[in-house]
Image (cartoon, rainbow, N blue to C red; front, side, top):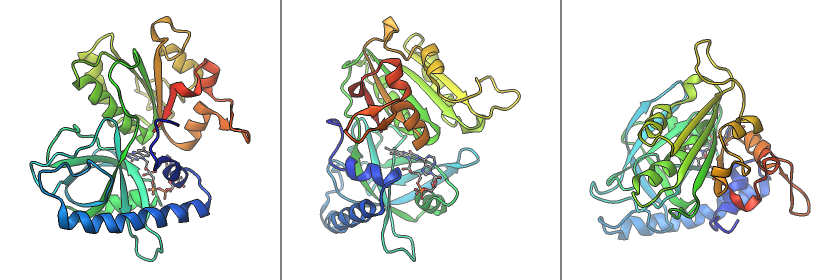
Length: 306
Ligand SMILES: Cc1cc2nc3c(=O)[nH]c(=O)nc-3n(C[C@H](O)[C@H](O)[C@H](O)COP(=O)(O)OP(=O)(O)OC[C@H]3O[C@@H](n4cnc5c(N)ncnc54)[C@H](O)[C@@H]3O)c2cc1C
């Protein structure tokens, strides 16, 4: 919990099965800050200043979109100035805000930039469309020239070489924080952390970042390992069928009993049922019950959820 930002406790329930009263409180609080910050930024920010170096809301214009599979779009948003850095640190997400017509409250959802955090002038998102999903439907409806409101959310503050190994466990679109983190680690020549990615998806088509991760594995043999698990693989799929289970993790070397991977940070991002299966459920008295990661022998402080 210590690694989490002040925003996290209010964001998490908004995303994953919260009570209505929490949602109302979050929306009101964040929207209030947002209107104020948006107004002040529009009038004050010097153009060469990193746009997301501190908390505040900014409207960005959509530059271009590209459909990258049957349900996921890559969207590139322009920063106000072409030479402007984003100011986002490893690792960060962006809280998006939209105001759908007919709703009293804004919709707030985090998305993880997938471009190089040092790229100037742009942030890029990969957004999966959930049928009926409020924000993903809105974002998929945007056309070049439309705007979306963003605020930065620091996620896991990455310290190079703090751990020998990071185990990334992703489900579906939960891959984007892993991609940002893996790119950031490998881009830093001083960071020697080894990486294992286990990515569970529904179909082969959902592996929309497989080429990028395969290239990392090829470039860093022995340091980067990727494992894909597909719930409904095609007849010609080279990937194992199923879900991210204890056996899959053990065979990928994600286990504290694996001598080579003793000093491991486990990072998780996926749909609620997957996260519950991995991390167990919180008991009334604050402890955690069950969960594949605990069964494997990981302690809660070794595990971070995006
Ligand atoms: C730190 C963080 C980073 C994220 N980064 C990305 C990203 O880069 N790209 C991306 O596409 N998403 C990302 N997400 C998920 C994203 O924030 C939204 O939860 C997602 O887009 C659904 O929002 P919605 O408003 O469209 O759906 P909602 O209106 O909230 O939900 C509608 C229905 O969609 C389904 N649904 C919603 N969320 C999920 C989910 N996570 N998994 C499975 N089914 C779901 C459920 O059936 C739900 O009933 C991230 C989440 C977190 C916590």
